[in-house]
Length: 212
Length: 275
Image (cartoon, rainbow over all chains, first blue to last red; front, side, top):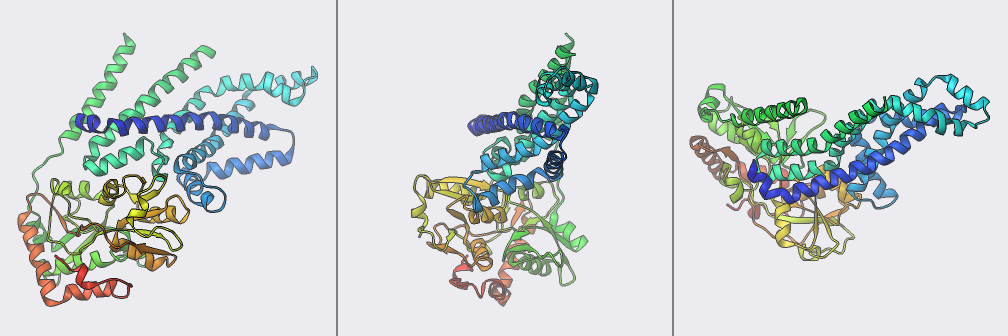
C-alpha cells in the first residue's frame, strides 16, 4: 500500500488537485445558481415560479452521470468544444445547484413571513427585502443541510472519472488497472477524499455553532 | 482530549479496514477438479466489444469470437454436456474477479504481457492481435506517426496495454482514458479526441458498425490474446492448451475465425491465427 503511494504520488496529487479545483468551482457557482433559482421560486410572479420549478425538477431527478455525459458528448458535437474537466464540472454545478435551490428555498420559507411584510411596509422593494432581511436569516437555518450538499458535491466530483477529467477517481482507476492492486488503491483514494471532506464537515459544524 | 479520542478512533477503524483487506489469501481449490464435478467452467468475458464479446440486448446473451472459443474449449475439456457460464468483466475488474475465484478463466480480449504474467498465467495465444488506430474517414492521420505531435489527443480505455504503448509510440500526444470502448468511440465521434487506439480486432468491430471511421496504418505491435488462468492451476492450463491445439487441428478454430471476421475487409485468417 505504501509502494502504491510512493510510486504514484504525482498522479494522486494531480488527481487531488483537480478534484479540489472542480469542487471549489462547482461549490461557488452552484451556491449562486441555486440561490438564484430559490429566490425565483419565491417571487410573486407565476411564470418565474414555473421556470424555476422546471429547472429544479429536471436536474434534481436526472442522474449526475447522465448530465455530465450530456455536456461531454452532446455539447462538443453541436455547440462548442469543451474538455472532460469542464464538462464534468458544469454537470456537477448544475446538478448540485438544483439541490441547493431546494435547500435555500426551505430556508427562505422558514423565515417568519412577518419579516417580509414588515420590510415591504417600511418601503423596501422585494429584492431589497430579500437580500437585506430574508436571505441573511435564511442562510443561518440552512447551514447544516448546505454542509451536507457540499460534502456530497465533493464526493460526486468523482463523476469526472467517467469523462476523463483527471480527478482523484480517474487517477485511482488507472493506478488500480495498471498495478492490479485494486483494494489498496481504492483505500488510498478513500483516505484522500476524507482529507478533503473531513475539514469541510468540521468547518460547517464550526460555522453552525458560531451563528446559532 | 475528547477531540484526540475521536481522531484516534477514526484511525483505529481505518487500521481495522486495512487488516481485514490483508486477510484475503485463502487456500484455493484445484479449478479443474471442481469444474469436472460441476460440469461448468465460469468464464470472464467482455460484453461491450463487438465481434469478441457483445451483449445481445434482445436475448440477454453475450455473443462473439471469445464466447464461441470459450464454449468450444469447455466442451473439449468437460465433454459435450458441459456448460460454459459467462460472467461479464471489464479491463478493470477481470483480474480481481479471477483472483477472488468468481471466475475460473478470463477470455476477454486480453493481451499476453510480461506485467500481467506476474499476476496470472496465460494459455497459448488464440488470436494474433496488434495495436492500431481508428480515425474519422476525412482525418489527415494516416498512421501512428501522424499522431505523435503536440496537441494530438488519443483516446483509449483504462487498464489496457494500448494506452501504455502510446507513451512509447506517440509520446507527444496526450492520452485520455475512458471506461470502455463504447464510451471511447462516443468521445471520438463528438470530437473529444483525434484518434482511438486499441487492438485491431476491436477496431474492426467498430468499423463494421460505423462506416464513417477507418482503421489506418496497420498494426504497430504484436500482442496476441491469451486465456488467463490464476497462478498454480497448471493442470487446468494444460487442458486449455490441449483443447486449443485440437481445435486448430480439426478446423473448428478456422471456422470460428471465418464466422466472425470473414466479411471484414482487410482481415486475413492466416495473420490472425499466428501462434
